[in-house]
Length: 119
Length: 108
Image (cartoon, rainbow over all chains, first blue to last red; front, side, top):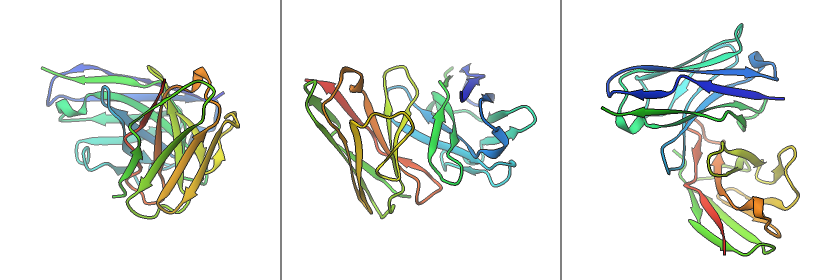
């Protein structure tokens, strides 16, 4: 079955960096567009970034553009999110999500990893 | 950016009753609209895509309708496991993909 397992979250000071990972299994990772979505505590869902099958054509939410970088390693079935110059408003649970092939529909979601930006 | 607006924010329903949730888009999204269910402490789960197609394994209690800018999610005969927060999301005009703010369905 499809499994997406995020890791790398934690408490970090404002201005510092963190890298999230998402280990994928149960599907052919290299055939899937992948996304990151976040959810601040008690708030709704916010799309963060997307990357295509081969790692090209990343797109970012305006709120993270220039600070976050999405990447993938298809040989390791792993998705990454490099987060630099973190701000308090980046505090959230970060989910990795795969996209239904041939569509832009968010399909399976991981359980998420919590990032807390605080001094 | 396409803004998604859900109503109501909270819906109080008795078990066995029907729940009707609304979602409005600030511009047409055709039928490229999805609904997700999120229970406390869990990740969202895809319920409906294409405005009306149930995802794999989703109960027939859940049905979606609409196109363009107005959409509805109907849950017939609410079960205890259906009490959750529901989000609509458009995937027509991206990036960005945008979500509604959510409707919480609670026990009356």
